[in-house]
Image (tube, rainbow, N blue to C red; front, side):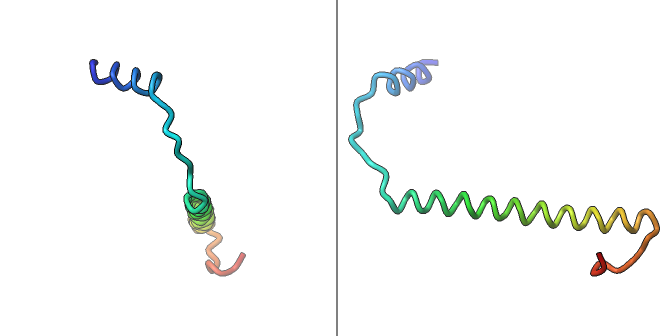
Length: 68
């Protein structure tokens, strides 16, 4: 508990850092966000196509995976 209280005290009453975020850091953060969004979109599309494929075969429609 002493560590927790010390950390809270440090963050509440700490001094100014006089620091800045480099513009390259902002670009890197934007790149990470866009890559994460692209990955989530890819997984969603892949999941949806596999779900459609599974359900179409379960209902007996068969069909090729390439046919829509």
